[in-house]
Length: 485
Image (cartoon, rainbow, N blue to C red):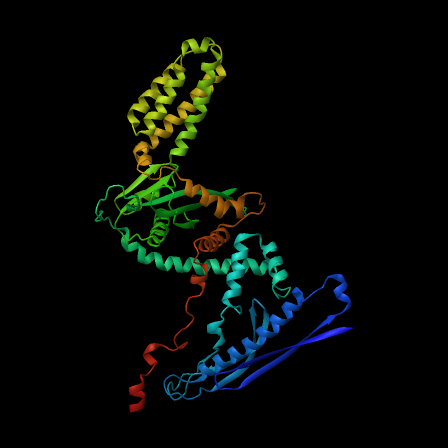
């Protein structure tokens, strides 16, 4: 025994005509014993496909009829021909009639130009919602897995393969990148040196704009390039510790002006208008030092305290071991642990010159022959040389971290480290075996960044309205002149 369900879809268009479609779904009585209660996913796909086909047909026909009317003389434009066009949606592919209209011969005499109106609202042969969903899934998981998820829950045809997901993700990334590049031209006007004009309020942590920046290494797929390439990852915001981190941005270009333009564009989203204190926090890499030099003044560059502390930590552990051992080496270096703690204390309070002198004195004592425990001394000496070189090369970027910390300001690149992990690490590096091209990685990161910033849908739903295609403005008559003629 079987039960046949008939579903009727009825709609009324702008002219009052009623559009009606019917579809049937058969449910078998025997399937109840298998636990098949209600509509299945396949039944839902059939229903939504039929409903989507009816709606898309009606909307495409209405829009084409609307575009056939000449906006100048309000008469129908001539017909070039009729073709068909397949529009891919989240609920299946719909095949619609695709007419091509000619320009009005009375308004544009001598111009033999045709255009397809559906190209305006559906240039990719796919709806913006499907493009957005495909790009979002492609940026969150491997392309093959994203294609499987689409086919599992949506009435997507088998042609929606991983290659389609990859192409759409890259295409959406290119659009986002073009939008950002156009917007950065406006942000470049803020690159001139300007001074703080806001009132200096005591304890106002939101006065400062902070850029936490770091680099991420991605495995390269190009044979003629290095094994890895770098992506610049940053998070821009305002306020101190415990407040929202702000907006992300990722750039595959390490050029000075490219990083600066991206940073200014991201700062605009958090309220930066060219006035205010900007602080750049980085780990001291040479690539990242280019940003504070190109940013509007006043801009302060700060070395991440975490990287300084991690260079001192192994030295402190070796010194503590020497003190606990109470060997002959302890008799020659009885204050080694206190000396290293003093260096760390002075760097924390921004006393760089005194810290450098203490490090030089400590290394001079370690260079003397110690006899036993030569391995520990050699290791301690190498770590001390690395720390001294790091402090000397970043002397101007070491500030009073204790004062900033007590004021509630940021002293570490925690935001950038988390951005590298959430943006690049989970998709490209950690437990992932794929390799990437520089172009593909950059475009994928634009999609992933826009998704995390919460602006992917708004950027892809830009207005589709365009002026009359292929008509230079000089040849387009105005209505008063047309009536006078």
